[in-house]
Image (cartoon, rainbow, N blue to C red; front, side, top):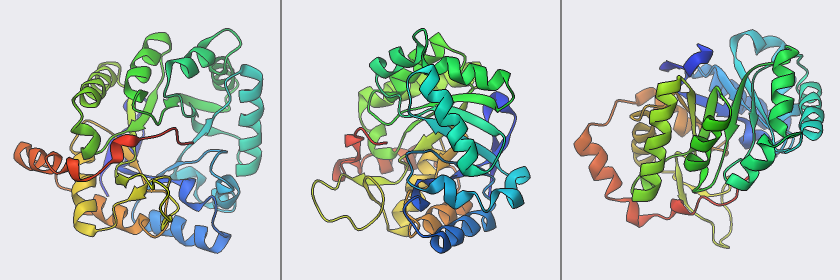
Amino acid sequence: MEKRRLGRTGHLSSVVTFGAAGIGRQPQDVADRAIQTALDHGVNHIDVAPRYGEAELRLKPWLPRIRRQIFLGCKTVERTRAAAKAELHRSLERLGTDRLDLYQLHSVGKLADLDLCTAAGGAVEALVEARQEGLVRWLGITGHTHDAPRTHLEALRRFDFDTVMFPLNFVLWAIPEYRASAEALLAECAKRDVGVHIIKSVAKDPWDGRARTHTTWYEPFTDDAIIDRAVAFVLSQPVTTLCSVGDVTVLPKVLAAAERFRPLDAAAERELVSTAARYHSPFVGEWA
């Protein structure tokens, strides 16, 4: 699997990051198979968070064996310094490690959340303190809403984050306002040498009350051909890595698509984006 430099961190991350949300509500044996599958495909970057059920505990047995070979990112949804500090130490304990490569503000998609995090006594202070103490090395921000790219652009004006993580897929790209804000953020990340993680790459539709067939917050694409094109679209943009889908049954399809990746030319990209009206992933709701 291709590897790309994660901005100023210098880490050569696999173009798929193992998104541990998919194992947080699975028994250990299912989680083990998913983790091994990712490793077998060359994944060397893992993203986890306290909000992902028992994902931290599912990873814990693996870390003594793989810690040196993977880039480990975690997150805090807390907005104050004290609460974020406490959550960091809880995550370290649950993961069974003494350090993280990356610690991120989780789900900061709105300016109101950013205001809380960057205020005096806010969570950013906990991140800075953790870096000074050697508990984490790099600091990032993530977001899940339509406002995330615009909010993250403002976040970079307020604090020198090392990475960003936000939604991007070919359906969102078809929305002029979203594309403009995403392009502005990507340009600023390139200028500042900020690593770019992408989420929701294979989001298809909201569930809208329908019975859920997968453990994702959205209905994912499941057809191999469409997943190939969706993954290729994202990886054809100036990004580092995309987080794997939060469902262990779709995970192998995303990994295989990344291994088959070839950049889309302009005509192929336009053709794919022209199909966006068939789907509704622009909903990108307030997901954890």
